[in-house]
Amino acid sequence: MEVGCVRSPRQQHLRKQVAALRQSRQCAIIPAGVASDGAVLSGNGFEGDVEQIRVVGKANCVSPDVRLEESEGYMKAAEVLHHFQQIGSWVNWNNSCDRFLHGDPQTEVAGIATGWIPTNEAIKSAHAKGLNLFVTHEDAFARRYEGTRSGDEMIQQKKRLLDECAMVVVRCHDTWDRMPEYGIPDAWAAYLGFETEDRPVESFYKVCRVPSLSLAETARAVLEKVRPLGQDTVLLLGDESRKVNRLAVGTGAITHLPTMRDLDADAILATDDGMNSWDGALWALDLGVPILVVNHATAEKPGMQAMVGHLSRQFPGVPAEYVDVALPFRSVH
Ligand SMILES: [Fe+2]
Ligand SMILES: [Fe+2]
View 1 (spheres, helix red, strand yellow):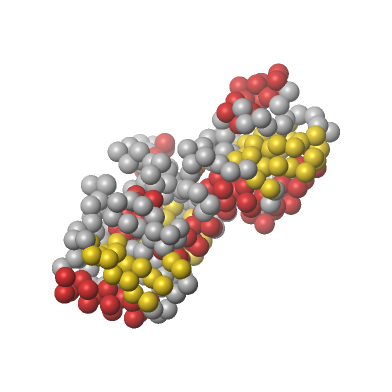
View 2 (spheres, protein in one colour):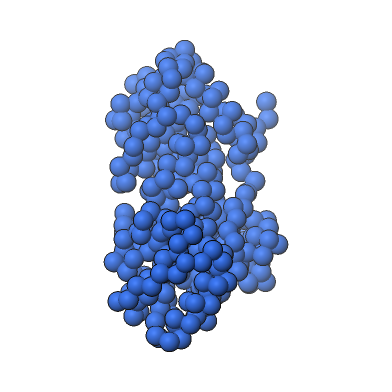
């Protein structure tokens, strides 16, 4: 293995050097920040304007559907999933939903869109911005409805739209659900603005240290934070005057209430898809555990927004932008 180091603030210059290296040495390139043994180089892989490039004989790919082959100095969509595979040591890559959902992984990436789900509107928006790789947290196709007339129609319609826009879609769910700092749980807790405790990488949950607010005050503090995300209400279950010092915070469809309570929490911030009323609320009311609830998308959007910063550092010169969707539901009072 050889390791090359290129110092250049300009991506075009860098790409030319990468192309020359490829031509002369018949090798594959792994983007900065990723070592062939799976280690992440110096956090995000960059220090100042130093861009490190590891040049190896051929990249070993974990997933059979991703291969880094020779290219003409441009970045392929496959390199993005390969990057997730390299950093996602907490993911079972033999059984992961993080994979290409549509399009050719060997497509040259003009720009990356990140988003919670690729609605047709989001796809059109990404296309209008000149982005052609959509990194989605949730699935692109409503597979639970597959086999119904409307479900199949929706899937075919979206595939046609993706083809028309030449949009490649890759899912990043398992990687981002536990990715330190930029990933879904850490970004969500940071977004809320409370002081937080460290999270073991295997955990989906964070503990926020609330400055001794009542449950109602905590709910209002959360509401003010989530309004810019489109969430205009926070649901509350329990005694509003109850003091909260430790708020267990979860995201997505995985706000398992007993696990969150075991974090010595006074209250829980769950999501609508992560708990249900028929046993979750029963558990909470009988045990006297206060619960706040926001929408699934609300809790995961900050992580997909933070992904832009991460990808921009990993793939400098490749535009990356967050694309929003019309969730959560608005409420009518
Ligand atoms: Fe989710
Ligand atoms: Fe998630």
